[in-house]
Length: 180
Image 1 (cartoon, one colour):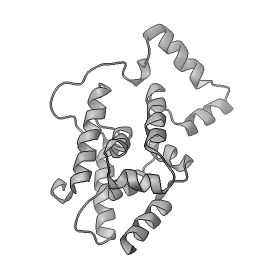
Image 2: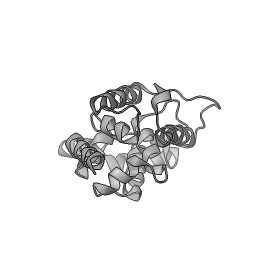
Image 3: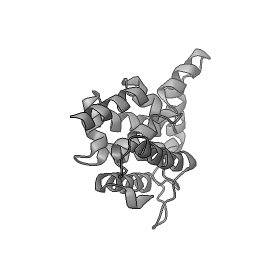
Image 4: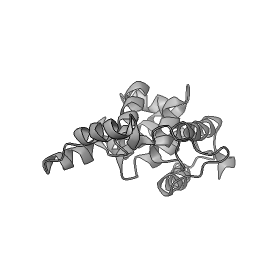
Protein backbone atom coordinates (compact mmCIF):
# COMPACT_ATOMS: atom_id res chain seq x y z
CA UNK A 1 0.00 0.00 0.00
CA UNK A 2 2.79 2.47 0.90
CA UNK A 3 4.11 2.39 -2.66
CA UNK A 4 0.97 4.36 -3.65
CA UNK A 5 1.63 7.07 -1.06
CA UNK A 6 2.64 10.50 -2.31
CA UNK A 7 5.76 12.06 -0.83
CA UNK A 8 3.74 14.30 1.49
CA UNK A 9 1.62 11.34 2.67
CA UNK A 10 4.81 9.43 3.46
CA UNK A 11 6.16 12.47 5.29
CA UNK A 12 2.95 12.66 7.35
CA UNK A 13 3.28 9.00 8.36
CA UNK A 14 6.95 9.49 9.28
CA UNK A 15 5.97 12.59 11.25
CA UNK A 16 3.22 10.58 13.01
CA UNK A 17 5.87 8.07 14.06
CA UNK A 18 8.07 10.90 15.36
CA UNK A 19 5.14 12.32 17.35
CA UNK A 20 4.41 8.88 18.83
CA UNK A 21 8.07 8.37 19.70
CA UNK A 22 8.31 11.83 21.33
CA UNK A 23 5.27 10.95 23.46
CA UNK A 24 6.81 7.63 24.45
CA UNK A 25 3.93 5.76 22.82
CA UNK A 26 4.09 2.09 21.96
CA UNK A 27 1.74 2.52 18.97
CA UNK A 28 0.88 5.22 16.46
CA UNK A 29 -2.61 6.48 17.32
CA UNK A 30 -5.08 8.64 15.38
CA UNK A 31 -3.89 11.69 17.30
CA UNK A 32 -0.38 11.01 15.98
CA UNK A 33 -1.64 10.69 12.40
CA UNK A 34 -3.46 14.03 12.63
CA UNK A 35 -0.40 15.62 14.24
CA UNK A 36 1.69 14.19 11.39
CA UNK A 37 -0.60 15.88 8.87
CA UNK A 38 -0.50 19.16 10.77
CA UNK A 39 3.29 19.08 11.20
CA UNK A 40 4.08 18.36 7.54
CA UNK A 41 5.16 21.65 5.98
CA UNK A 42 3.22 22.48 2.80
CA UNK A 43 1.32 19.18 2.96
CA UNK A 44 -2.03 18.74 1.24
CA UNK A 45 -3.70 17.76 4.53
CA UNK A 46 -2.64 20.95 6.29
CA UNK A 47 -3.67 23.05 3.27
CA UNK A 48 -7.10 21.38 3.29
CA UNK A 49 -7.50 22.03 7.01
CA UNK A 50 -6.52 25.66 6.52
CA UNK A 51 -8.99 26.00 3.62
CA UNK A 52 -11.64 24.67 5.99
CA UNK A 53 -10.70 27.28 8.61
CA UNK A 54 -8.53 25.20 10.94
CA UNK A 55 -4.99 26.32 11.70
CA UNK A 56 -2.00 24.11 12.43
CA UNK A 57 -1.65 25.81 15.81
CA UNK A 58 -5.28 25.01 16.76
CA UNK A 59 -4.88 21.35 15.78
CA UNK A 60 -1.60 20.90 17.65
CA UNK A 61 -2.82 22.74 20.76
CA UNK A 62 -6.00 20.68 20.90
CA UNK A 63 -4.08 17.44 20.35
CA UNK A 64 -1.80 18.38 23.25
CA UNK A 65 -4.85 19.00 25.45
CA UNK A 66 -6.33 15.62 24.44
CA UNK A 67 -3.03 13.85 25.20
CA UNK A 68 -2.76 15.59 28.57
CA UNK A 69 -6.20 14.21 29.42
CA UNK A 70 -5.18 10.69 28.40
CA UNK A 71 -7.11 10.72 25.12
CA UNK A 72 -10.37 12.11 26.45
CA UNK A 73 -12.01 14.33 23.83
CA UNK A 74 -13.96 17.53 24.44
CA UNK A 75 -17.16 15.60 23.66
CA UNK A 76 -16.25 13.06 26.35
CA UNK A 77 -15.45 15.87 28.81
CA UNK A 78 -18.82 17.45 28.09
CA UNK A 79 -20.65 14.14 28.61
CA UNK A 80 -18.80 13.45 31.86
CA UNK A 81 -19.54 16.98 33.09
CA UNK A 82 -23.25 16.17 32.81
CA UNK A 83 -22.64 13.44 35.41
CA UNK A 84 -20.82 15.88 37.68
CA UNK A 85 -17.34 14.65 36.76
CA UNK A 86 -14.76 17.42 36.35
CA UNK A 87 -12.12 15.90 34.05
CA UNK A 88 -9.77 18.88 34.31
CA UNK A 89 -9.81 18.63 38.11
CA UNK A 90 -9.04 14.90 37.91
CA UNK A 91 -6.18 15.50 35.48
CA UNK A 92 -4.75 18.21 37.76
CA UNK A 93 -4.89 15.90 40.81
CA UNK A 94 -3.21 13.08 38.89
CA UNK A 95 -0.49 15.47 37.72
CA UNK A 96 0.01 16.72 41.30
CA UNK A 97 0.67 13.15 42.38
CA UNK A 98 2.44 11.71 39.34
CA UNK A 99 3.86 14.76 37.58
CA UNK A 100 2.96 16.81 34.52
CA UNK A 101 1.75 14.81 31.55
CA UNK A 102 1.17 11.67 33.62
CA UNK A 103 -1.85 10.65 31.53
CA UNK A 104 -0.08 11.55 28.29
CA UNK A 105 2.76 9.13 28.78
CA UNK A 106 4.81 11.47 30.94
CA UNK A 107 8.05 11.30 28.98
CA UNK A 108 8.42 7.52 28.61
CA UNK A 109 10.43 6.78 25.52
CA UNK A 110 9.47 4.07 23.09
CA UNK A 111 12.19 1.71 21.99
CA UNK A 112 14.15 2.58 18.89
CA UNK A 113 12.95 1.25 15.58
CA UNK A 114 9.53 0.76 14.12
CA UNK A 115 6.45 1.80 16.08
CA UNK A 116 3.39 -0.15 14.92
CA UNK A 117 0.04 1.39 14.09
CA UNK A 118 -2.79 0.99 16.61
CA UNK A 119 -5.92 -0.70 15.23
CA UNK A 120 -7.73 2.57 14.52
CA UNK A 121 -4.67 4.03 12.77
CA UNK A 122 -4.41 0.87 10.62
CA UNK A 123 -8.06 1.31 9.75
CA UNK A 124 -7.29 4.89 8.73
CA UNK A 125 -4.67 3.63 6.29
CA UNK A 126 -7.15 1.13 4.84
CA UNK A 127 -9.90 3.75 4.58
CA UNK A 128 -7.52 6.20 2.92
CA UNK A 129 -6.83 3.62 0.20
CA UNK A 130 -10.58 3.15 -0.29
CA UNK A 131 -11.00 6.93 -0.58
CA UNK A 132 -8.29 7.11 -3.22
CA UNK A 133 -10.03 4.34 -5.20
CA UNK A 134 -13.44 6.07 -4.83
CA UNK A 135 -11.95 9.28 -6.20
CA UNK A 136 -10.25 7.42 -9.04
CA UNK A 137 -6.79 8.51 -7.86
CA UNK A 138 -3.74 6.41 -8.65
CA UNK A 139 -1.91 7.85 -5.65
CA UNK A 140 -2.73 8.03 -1.95
CA UNK A 141 -2.20 11.52 -0.55
CA UNK A 142 -2.74 13.41 2.65
CA UNK A 143 -6.21 14.38 1.46
CA UNK A 144 -7.15 10.68 1.52
CA UNK A 145 -5.69 10.32 5.02
CA UNK A 146 -7.81 13.27 6.19
CA UNK A 147 -10.92 11.76 4.57
CA UNK A 148 -10.21 8.55 6.46
CA UNK A 149 -9.58 10.31 9.79
CA UNK A 150 -12.96 12.04 9.77
CA UNK A 151 -14.69 8.66 9.34
CA UNK A 152 -13.29 7.27 12.58
CA UNK A 153 -14.74 7.57 16.07
CA UNK A 154 -13.01 9.24 18.99
CA UNK A 155 -11.14 12.39 19.90
CA UNK A 156 -9.66 13.13 16.46
CA UNK A 157 -12.90 13.27 14.48
CA UNK A 158 -14.53 15.02 17.46
CA UNK A 159 -11.78 17.66 17.42
CA UNK A 160 -12.21 18.17 13.67
CA UNK A 161 -16.02 18.19 13.87
CA UNK A 162 -15.84 20.91 16.53
CA UNK A 163 -14.20 23.04 13.81
CA UNK A 164 -16.82 22.10 11.20
CA UNK A 165 -14.54 19.56 9.50
CA UNK A 166 -16.37 16.36 8.67
CA UNK A 167 -16.46 13.88 5.80
CA UNK A 168 -18.79 15.99 3.67
CA UNK A 169 -16.75 19.19 4.05
CA UNK A 170 -13.43 17.45 3.33
CA UNK A 171 -14.85 15.55 0.36
CA UNK A 172 -16.31 18.79 -1.04
CA UNK A 173 -12.96 20.60 -0.61
CA UNK A 174 -11.11 17.74 -2.32
CA UNK A 175 -13.59 17.73 -5.22
CA UNK A 176 -13.29 21.51 -5.63
CA UNK A 177 -9.50 21.27 -5.61
CA UNK A 178 -9.56 18.55 -8.28
CA UNK A 179 -12.04 20.51 -10.41
CA UNK A 180 -9.94 23.68 -10.18
